[in-house]
Length: 86
Image (cartoon, rainbow, N blue to C red):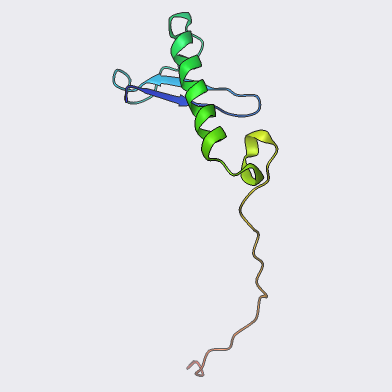
């Protein structure tokens, strides 16, 4: 694809790059008037994708929670199986 759209929720900044012309993604075109329709189209496609495939329990854009869990392990001191020579 020629374009890359990044939406940062909830307050941005969103990004739009023409990667075939700007492979280093140095020029964010999100606020360029001549690229407004491209940004709108890609935003709509992104939202359609998540509306279709995202599990509502984990859709962070719509109030879902994180799917990751915090794992805490007991810290135990383990003695080496041999005595150290000094």
